[in-house]
Length: 275
Ligand SMILES: NC(=O)c1ccc[n+]([C@@H]2O[C@H](COP(=O)([O-])OP(=O)(O)OC[C@H]3O[C@@H](n4cnc5c(N)ncnc54)[C@H](OP(=O)(O)O)[C@@H]3O)[C@@H](O)[C@H]2O)c1
Image (cartoon, rainbow, N blue to C red):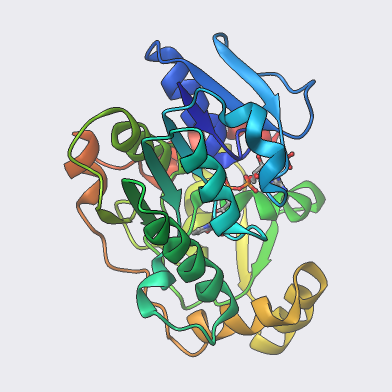
């Protein structure tokens, strides 16, 4: 039985569906027990910041898909070990490869990876590039009109569909040969925000236009949405160029046997979110 944390999120929901459709026994960690899940998936409540609260969810689990960055990652892994979990797939991020603990975003990924390694449990670490689903952050602007404004207009990212991350996670959880691997995962093409807006305009049939924010504007807006240390982290990544997520890597296809989805495919699969 597989426990999927973040089961209502962009990756977790896809992973629960993928495992359930494959006929695997799957348990979804949720905070709201009333949440709707795919047929065959069982909901269990728990708080990732409280490792002991995961005991009911972990009971009987052989594999766990784990999100990073919660308060006591060694404690979570300890609970998993104690019930006999045999395999963990950890979601991390591309910047963890820097080893830079002075960057707050990299630091929580690095510490989560360390907790997994220190647990001694067989594990696969996934380091995806930026998610295509970050585009959903444009929804308020798209409801208000046809102009999308965003930060870092000159930064191209080989964004990945969360469904592809979930597909890799499903393979790593359910088949042998992936324990001990660290997979850098990307989508099939590097895209600047203006290119994403152009593709979204075609898919939605709307005359959308992109306007890049200045770094000063972006800093003010981001400061309203996240703690200052994360704003600094993203400025170091994208304004100072410390993280290059533009290279396209073959990993998704190597692991899943099919190429990663394009941004147009992601947009077509999510048109209802934009209506
Ligand atoms: N966005 C990117 O470009 C990017 C790139 C690389 C890595 N990442 C990493 O990806 C992760 C986010 O993945 P995602 O997009 O799938 O996230 P998401 O869609 O925002 O989902 C987060 C999930 O975690 C659950 N959750 C949050 N706090 C919890 C808690 N205390 N206990 C139990 N469950 C909790 C949420 O449940 P509720 O429904 O109850 O809120 C939700 O299911 C982050 O860790 C981020 O660092 C993101």
